Amino acid sequence: MTASYFRNERDDHTLQPTALVNEVYIRLGDQDSNNVVSRNHFFGVASRLMRQILVDHARTKRAGKRGGDWSRVTLSSVHGESSAREVDIVVLDEVLSWLEALNEGYARLVELRFFSGLTSVEAGEILGVSRTDLARRWRIIKAWLIDELRGRQNT
Image (tube, rainbow, N blue to C red; front, side, top):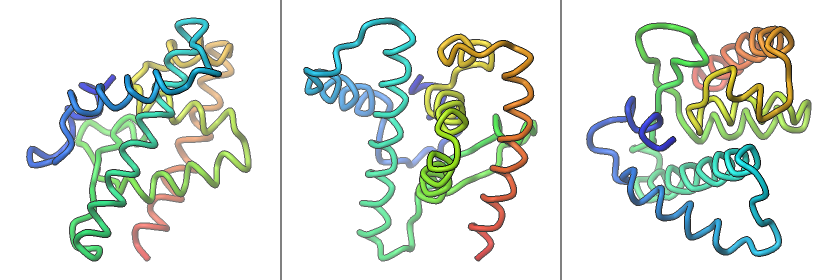
């Protein structure tokens, strides 16, 4: 999962895949009340933890540089383009938080696809959604997400 995230990341990113995996592992161990009960549950929890860790890291970097060194990641899986497009991870987190308030299932799908690097089929299995329904949902989410990200990053 971390390899899929860092594959499109800048070479000088200060958080390394091994450190991200270690942090996820530590946080999983700290969640005594949320014991992982299945593979699907693991991917759900791990993707949420990776999102939190990456956003915290990006916010720390941004605060340290007074906004001059924003952490950027690619979101080619959302854009469906062959060339990677950079997206500010903090802006993505804000958009996903807003989407969670509107439709938590849609936000979980983006989280699983982007932060966990899962395919549509794998994410559909975890969410218990048929391929047809997942394809419909993904088209809706992708269009909405592209529009929101463009609007927030251009301001």
